[in-house]
Length: 187
Image 1 (cartoon, helix red, strand yellow):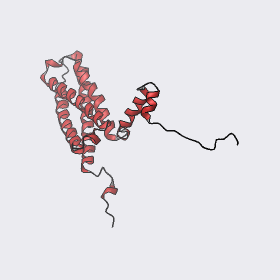
Image 2: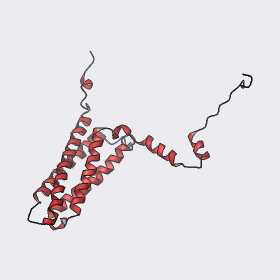
Image 3: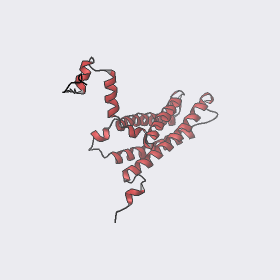
Image 4: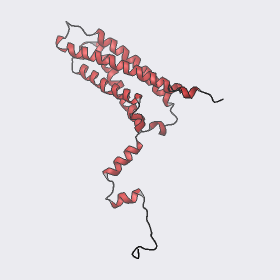
């Protein structure tokens, strides 16, 4: 007991001074900073899962069409335009929501914007799917028939995913989110 000091002093340092002592910008500090900026609750939500499905399946669709001679039929030009454009826009929107653009860009009415985007995307994808499905002929381009048929299938699935996203975006825009407790009024 005699060796224990009577006064104990503690010093604290800021996280920036620790990083400077460890040799500047460490990769661990950068990863910790990025994960604090990400909205991890969004990743686990149904709209995020649907957006990931739209990105992956949309990529499959336009990759299948791009691997075939799609320039020979004008309908496939429309399908490629819709698939690639919405794939890029959905990827950008996904990362904007993931990294908190909703909190930084408060002047944008996000629920209405996301709902309008998904509604327009589902209509555009429906027209692209129909153009793709109608243009699949068994006697024309028989070597690429499987590519075009698979692209039509993925187009149908992506159309359904965009429709489901539009529905969940509508619920978010409406404000109730499907929760019955929000509609009760205390008496």
